[in-house]
Image 1 (tube, helix red, strand yellow):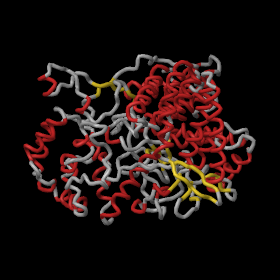
Image 2: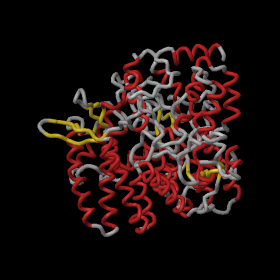
Image 3: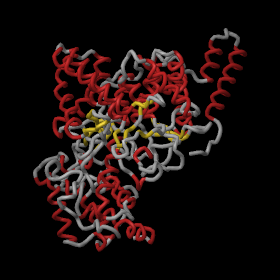
Image 4: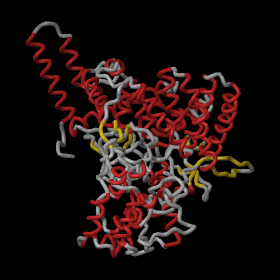
Length: 619
């Protein structure tokens, strides 16, 4: 181990003796023997702790994504045969490396690329984009679906399967929890599906006309509900204690609106109700405001140990926190990961530092607005299949819940919705795009158009529209968290655009277009520079670039970014135009004078250069 690693290891494990595997009543691991036969490999145990103590890999996620070459029992037996009860600090690093090489395969080696059967070269919606440059770009993004499609490689052969004359990779030899073969993933280090990412991937797939792939993704997520009772954060066993923003019901809505597949809706509705019941049963709390009680929803996972995919980071950030407070600290970190915003000053008591995280004390406006939208969609879907009784039930629930959102989260003075703090009984009035989610979901009384217009004015007042690349995730600077200023994210910008676009106010609709144009042009310029789409973007500079901050390097790919862009290009198919496209259009309509056409095309080319010029070495 290098000197740097020795110092890091001493900081990581000097407090709390995490290398002693704890199975006490107070420890709630992210998976266990009730839901995963390989839990002692990927969710807790001496191998996980030893690999992280010795920092074998730069990224904690590397190890927990490695499939085993043998059954879980054989792997654990081999560990104890090799190392006995040796504590992680005393495990020789060279022997540890040899063990990992002998008994584990590389991350992602259980997956191979696949081409979706419904992928076609020129989908009609993409071909309807009038700007030729943006249309060509959209076709490139459409082509990326083939690289984000993965299936299990049936020919990964383990020693135990050889003995059984089997050529299939056993399901308990990998941390993937996905029960079906094909999935669409985010890309980069994310070699599995992610729950709320999937909504924007679905939006993009529908633009691509890939209805079978969309249906398959929904079935994949629904199967998780049938198996585990909810949709986990992602498709790995180490995500089995937390979910993400509830977007399965909205995905079914988007699919139905595109296909009118009523039988599919009829078949899947019981699963959708089951998933919503998970949130009712496991993520609600009661608030008393005045003399009335309100039932609201939180991100609140039960796990209170380091997350396996961020094990080193969780132990390091807990350094200096007393042992009795570490479980709550880790629970709050995991709960923030459940929100999808991992991490943001939104969850911090001092609005500055991760060490003050208190996610489980916060009632988030966006989650509650999404739950309200789930009620609204279920009312609609039950009505579509002819079940007026259930439809009426959800209409009543939604109507009452709209009143809850108004009483708990709405600030009459500022004209916006905000998170609510359970201890201080105050709203967090800092700007975050989460305040706009009620506008996106329509979870306010339709006759009260003034509420949406006041929110629009609030956003103008805080300067949310003043940035060249889109809307930042907060106005809080220097936090170094990825869900803060200056990063902009596709799901947040997309929800803001859609919320404003659906308004009846012409000024708000115009602002939606302006943000969409900024977001599309910024993404395009970064793509031209790097040849990649990215999970997040720095929105503040004249020259857009990939975002920064967080526990890992910015990732390319990228599922929800591609989906959001395709949806925006389809929505504004005849409005958003790049400068060089306008020049080229002028050339094509300038007549048959060859010299004029050549000059026009030269101007067009110069426009393209100008658009992608400036600061060529920023990345």
